[in-house]
Amino acid sequence: MNALSDIAARRASLLARLEAAARGAGRELDAVTLVAVSKLQPDDRIAAALAAGQRVFGENRVQEAQARWSARREALPDLRLRLIGPLQTNKAGDAAALFDAIDTLDREKLAVALAVAAQKLGRSPDILVQVNTGEEPQKAGVSPQEADAFIRLARETYSLPVKGLMCIPPLGEPPAMHFALLAKIAARNGLAELSMGMSGDFETAIRFGATQVRVGSALFGERE
Image (cartoon, rainbow, N blue to C red; front, top):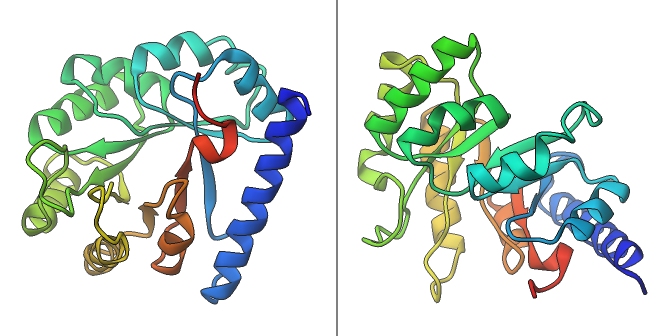
């Protein structure tokens, strides 16, 4: 099987699993978006995913995303790019110009930079707040206890279009309790979007209300 047909087959299998998980949770079949995690993938695999119909991609670094997608933007009007990696404040303007959504807002300094960028551009990408559900010191994200106040700050003080939340559960812990916590914070803040779940646990995330799942290896295969 060549790379194109291999990725097409994996994508079809993933979409079937997404639909089955949504059905099992009593949700609409189109309630969950597959975000293809394209960081460090070679260009032929990206081309294969595009040829298979994938249009939503998650990138970790602004510079890598600019190199990969800037020329493709015009040819693919239905392309949607999400920044799913940490964002430095000095890259906020470039990120706001390129991405349709920034899923990793986690501090006030970055909120300021994104608000300034939005004012210059006359528009803003959608924003998700990253919550550090495991309160891991090495990981980005606001703590669950600070999430409500930070969401309010981003919306009211900086007028950012906060649509939802994102989390990355700690390795080695059952992810379900982290997904449940994120869903609870989102519900009490009236947020509809939940980016949670990756290749190994996205079906569990869908049960807890994920609207986007971030899948890399299960779609592209292991990185070389």
